[in-house]
Length: 241
Image (spheres, rainbow, N blue to C red):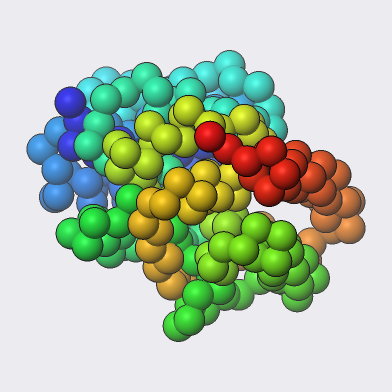
């Protein structure tokens, strides 16, 4: 059994992935004797795959999974988690917007019986630097989740989450979302099943540019609105059992 499993989902992330891999591996070596870093790639372009193969070859602590379908982040993370037996499971987005140092802080949450630790851009004392339109839409989405589902979490989408075995087992049983809504669904499952959630404020700097395209926001909306409706039916109307 591993002490710690870190999953890094990627899709054409060659600009950031070398940096995050170097920093995470250096940190984990100091903390764990038995860990694994797994990069799971969603059919990136050839240049990214070549880079990933070069970064992961001849390293027993780092593995690469390729050939996954695009835009299937939740499914990729769960698929990778399911392949390994570990005491703790974590994933972090490849753009490294949250500092890797927050992984250290997250580990301390488990001494307080936390089942799911969540990096949060909107918790008290958090600092976020991102385009105004993107920030507005993100805050609105989280407020709607709070209203519709009655949970207290302020940031459901931050790409930094850590699970213990109990939380992951329950999420595996009830999860149905495979896209980016999987982050929200995982939080709601743990909330409705009475697990302890801990939200950790972070300093977040958007690294994908100073502006957010309207096309990207529309694409996100087309993903999240149907997902929200599906989850509302499952959690509030039908109920998860």
